[in-house]
Image (cartoon, rainbow, N blue to C red):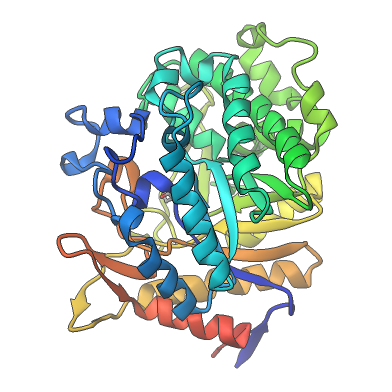
Length: 448
Ligand code: IFM
């Protein structure tokens, strides 16, 4: 038997995001977002699903917070919908939107749950997308206006802030591959959008620190882990290219104030828009922590003569995969943490998302999701190993508290530790949720 006992102050939490759980998209003055429009466009989201009702958390948050308390969560990571606060993205403030997060916050605090708020988890007000969205440099000011309003209202009670969730995803999938809202397919748009997202992060850090006493603020990235397909130099270099494209592109400016040289060489002329002072605010406003969302790894094979612009392909391995067709690769969470620690040494890291989609079956009042339990056990064992090796991992947030709207996959993928029966909105704590609650109580677990 091996015991995995975590440090005494280790933070155990669960995470969600506004568009994925709230529903109530037409209520109380909320503005339209890019995801409302994308989901409304035929063929973009599986089964024509949308976040219109989702988990109806907007109305059921007291019940959901009670479930969090039942699980014994120390912390809850949620996101704030920009379009509830500023329906047009800037300008007129919608008091009902602020009231909702105010009530949610107070309910969490009364129940002894520490709130972690993400300021942006992909639901951009459509009015801003109409002006170019993340490709328009003005987004830095627009985001700043929104962050100022939210932090002024909630900052007396909310101390832990996350600026952006997975900027790689919302800029690459949103502007280059087109798989996510707003659905553009243009590499140049992506590069600009990604650059502006880093600048917007810096602006937000600046504002949070100015407006919120004793605040802690960081960004949430989704760094990849890649292993070379073979031990050839080409495959090794290809695997490093993926790390530069998805990880160092964000981490290098955050910790060194400039883009990595290898990606600058790949993008070449496409970077001509860069201004000399673009990173001044970033350099002047370091983050307090780094959030890491992590699920799977990629095995990468070099393809020097292919059309693939990064000149590699990923090779599917004969190992267990989740419903997302993501390989279960627990050792990769250790590898990615070590890579970040060795190259950038953030002073504090949280795993801000980790979890798995499986095909859950309800049996009476139970969901026996033993594969998800095994997933959590294995990934957490490698988090424990990272801590033992001196990596400053301070907390872990399961993704997700509830089954929810999984973006382009609609409701077809269930990531929750709590099952949601969408027609009735009944919640059932899955076996993984019960296991997680026990792990929190024991501050660890034992494996044979
Ligand atoms: O559901 C998403 C979440 O919104 C961002 N990180 C990955 C999750 C699973 O795909």
